[in-house]
Length: 310
Length: 250
Image (cartoon, rainbow over all chains, first blue to last red):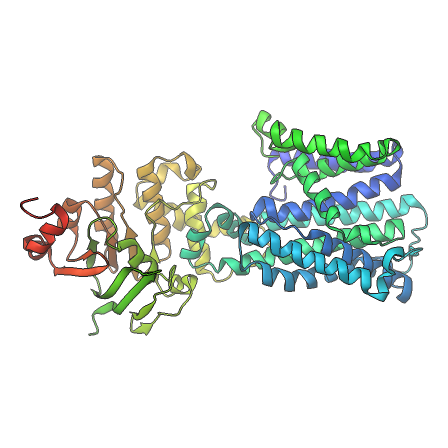
């Protein structure tokens, strides 16, 4: 089915079932947050897991997606789907320029360039009038879907977010299992050999980068409309750190890892919030545990134990 | 002139003050197997890297099929039909043998930027890929991940992948390095079979392989061409013997 292996297909069905059942048990706004971060983490994982590119600046695309979606929904009164799409296109547009600059270098230099560019975006957001500086863009309305379907109730919004997430998830899956994805895998395995076969590897990396930033922008835009707010937190590099942690905890290069990682990390933030700064301490401990004890992440270790490609 | 497929003039590569390749004039005739030999550090691999554009020469020109390729990109040179293999066998380890070969076949269709399509469409290349694997004796491991293949078989897979591009000219960097006798014989037989209609330039240390296989031999030492000719001529050259074995009274 769709190029899923049997185990992945089962995983996918379970995931969809959980998405359908969960709002009956858990708070929908919490779940929407999880899904937005899950999409963001999947977008990040597309680069690190399947191309071997470690970006350090994905907060920029996510955050700008937030701002643009929030601003267009509030000031232009665009409908939800257009605002989110514009958020994604903003991410992709930035990604085109930043990727073009960063991909000329590899490894740690690539990571540093993406970080530097993302920091520039952050300072731009502090200064630019349209972002509202420290206040952010607040009280963003949730315009109706396609201008007709009201999203005022959280459940209605939840189904939209679930739909966006699933589309993004399937798009990534298709990208990985496409002729393009084959070349990406070849580049990850042995870039010199891919070049010697006649592939201009930089072009492929660039397209993958732009796709990833597009999805990061979509994730950001969706989150902004769920919470009705876009702030500096969304473009700050710590946001990127969070998504790295999610992918790592779930398992880099796995299909479901980033989703599980997003669930775990967001749950910790929400349910341990009463302990204040202990949340960050716990996160730190989990990060260390991950690196020391289970490097493949939760899903990665599970997959290895079951000898399945999850 | 027309039978020259690859020609370099004054090819030089300096690293700092050190000339790894110094004023090399190389002429490879179409349809021949040409060997590049020489002691360690003679500049053979650097020469390969220059020819396939993985390194930019400090000075000199490279012409392939009459075209100046001195300033081209490595991927472009591969598209023109000059394809190399590597000293350390270069395969895509976590892909199957079939996928390895298919990646080369897939390149011939042009850019593979269609991320919205299913990889199912690549199955059209399966037949040709299997035929190539059969040709190099890997027919039974099409669905095996390359990482589990033996060293000799990895090299065979690399050659199959290179062949899939139907290159005018193949550059093989030590195709038999580190192989057992049986594997060496297999690779030599393979090269004999695939040479038809192609030109091959190879770096090789194993002189018995060179003797049986190659039409022309160029000897490099310290980045310079020391001698050139067929095996008999070159092996009779006293300077070559000195370069390989040291001086007679040493």
